[in-house]
Amino acid sequence: MTMAAAIESRVTETRAQAEATRVADVEIFRDMAAAESTWRALEGPGSVLTPYQRFDLLAAWQNQIGVQTGVEPLIAIARDTHRQPLMLLPFGIQREHGVRVASFLGDKHITFNMPVCRRDFLTTATRGDIDAVLDALRAPALAIDALALARQPRHWQSFANPMALLPTQVSVNGCPLMSIEVNAPPTDLISKSFRRRLKSKEKKLQALPGYRYLKAETDADIARLLDAFFIIKPQRMALQKLPNVFADPVVEEFIRRACHTALPDGGHAIEIHALVCDDELIAIYAGVADGDRFSMMFNTYTLSEVAHFSPGLILMRYIVDHYAGLNYSAIDLGIGSDEYKRLFCKTDEPIFDSFIGLNARGKMAASGLSAMAHLKRLVKQTPALMKAAQTIRGSLSR
Image 1 (cartoon, rainbow, N blue to C red):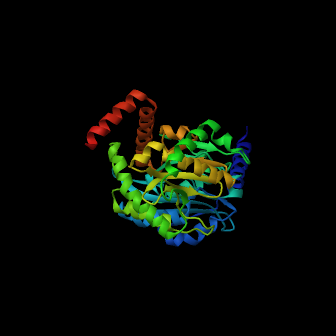
Image 2 (tube, helix red, strand yellow):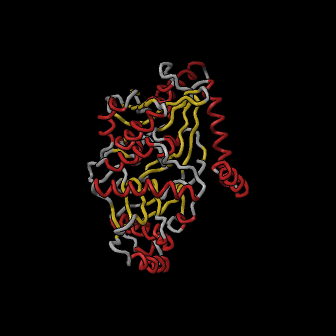
Image 3 (cartoon, one colour):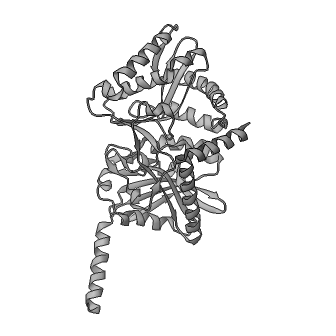
């Protein structure tokens, strides 16, 4: 090939790459209020996002937990040549072992992480688009060394997650998933035999005065259910020799604010389902919903003797029937492999992590974070190692 032909080939290749990249500019916001109007506009029907990336939910988290833990918001908005937003990445920056790491806002309190994207962008997004965002994040003024992007679904509402164009690895834990076919008969979701067993157990609960299933809609119901939850859950965790992850008052305040935050569609940023009677909260499940999928965040059940009648499983049956009746396509029960989840969920949501170094120091940090995640997954997948880890954790919690 002649030099002229080689130059022409490179020019053609560069032109093709430019045409394939829709991201013309990346705007960076350092506080959430400044990005709010664009963020809310991107939450409309022309976009795809998980309910965990709604502005209302993450603003509640940042204003409580993020502020206390030193998270600096960094909202990156990719725009096209017409200055129209294509994708919003809700990041926060923290210093870890001397390295400034950007991650999705919400930390461990959020199950899934994904950008907020326009639907038409998701169908054409290229690695060049994602690289354009990474280039913007390398700006010296931002001083970001690495990205630690955990628990990302490969697909949402049948759209591919564009962040999967980056190097990925399987997440530490899976997420049990129940897929719901349109107009599927109830027995396709929960078998007749399982329903009979639950119905038999529920007869014991139905004898309790005021027994009922409740989806909390009013502020009074929400407050009453959460008051009971924050009494019962710490005791449940203590019985399991687990640390009380709700002990910090800002965690409780985040949950309360999100549960009370009403959404334009009439729901709440976090929705609460419960079994109650006149004397007590029997069981509670809470999570996020977006018209297509319900994703559980936290739960607990009574400490009284009626716990023997499997109230958590009975409540889960109500939840499955509720969302199937609304033509939802899926329900997930959150990260983790608890046995009860397998009674309802037969598959796992494929989720991945990405650890990306933006400079030399960040590349070393990303390599270490990746190795640590691999090790955690190995422990989780190896029964003997997992048992040893649980034994150590139990001894430390005494």
